[in-house]
Figure 1 (tube, rainbow, N blue to C red):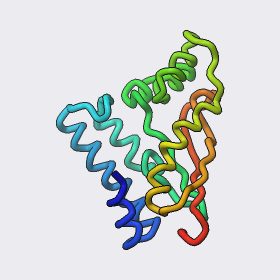
Figure 2: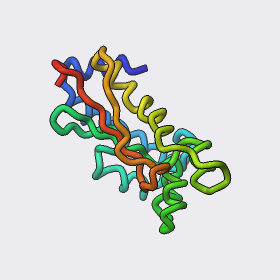
Figure 3: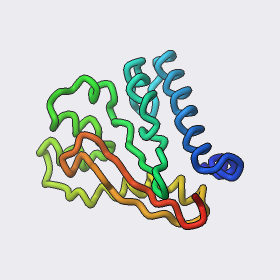
Length: 160
């Protein structure tokens, strides 16, 4: 699934790959907003595209030194952007049904450590690209009380 990313990395380096990921995401979101078709079960509007456009960290990644920072796009981006209540904003951010139920107090509390599952998904592309395991740290998460889910992925030595 990520072989194309590895090829771009080998030609353009990590910064070129991250730029490609952001530009590709924007093209995909713009098309979904025009067509009205769901994007991974999510409604995409021009407002969602405008939210993502200036922040390449969202769903793509930004390199700072030997780290890549990635913020997940909200699970329900339209509702997330409209929401003012922090608890509901966290709910609309989170992609995990178990965690979402916990945020609404409809289930026993789920530990923020559970968000390393999402971190594993975010690092997977870079594991493939670098052909080495990467390390991920959860910096912010809906389960920890944050309104976004943000991860730091360490670039393996010799790959930056």
